[in-house]
Length: 269
Ligand code: T3D
Image (cartoon, rainbow, N blue to C red; front, top):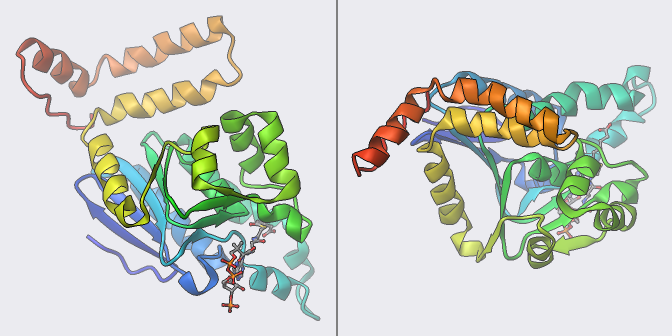
């Protein structure tokens, strides 16, 4: 099933919702229209039980070049409304709900990083649970080059994934980090040849979509909670979440399949 958005394309198949950022002429720069369409696509993915994994990629040669700088410049136009210079409000309205949903939706997200991921585009990729990168892909915390600070939780994601020194270097210098370097730093899960990216990412997404979705969603909560937890907090949170996981059909199916020496058929509930 495909949809009729203009700045993104969506395709749903075999439990995988693929969202393709689709403004290739600007390297998929993020504009207001894209924020509205992405929010709608993610809301529906959250609601649809049939969606058991979300895969985000970019059309053309880039993943996403971050905020559309043409749209930013239009904010300074003579006569433009003063609210258009409300940078904090813009983040709260156009970016934060998207990042929050990616980080908290109880379904796995994969970024198939097909080219450069710059500025908020890098933050989007970093907000996903897993990243698979084309060999020619790169990550660039470009914010500093336009005198802005990293947003969309990019600094937090980097700190969590690569540690302070590398996060600071990426954010202060804004240099491109190659896919191979990103792999060595633990910023991506896999690097594949450019021509193999779509198939490799699709295969990983289909595999995740056939797994116990509730258990994976609850595990995502557990991982996110773990950053600030004490051992005592974490043990209690595990007990709380296991109470839910243990009551799913997929838990019973997993146990039965193991004991009956057959492949489990998970249904996502
Ligand atoms: O309130 C708020 O909204 C704040 C939010 C901020 C969030 C942010 O994301 S801030 C950071 C914004 N992004 C950037 O600063 C990155 C800008 N782009 C680049 O630095 C480079 O394009 C890349 C390093 C990403 C790729 O370089 P390259 O040489 O491969 O491509 P290019 O030639 O620079 O770009 C190709 C075209 O895309 C070009 O258009 P043209 O000349 O062919 O008509 C270029 O202008 C356009 N483009 C690339 N990035 C953007 C863009 N157009 C608008 N906005 C962009 N971000």
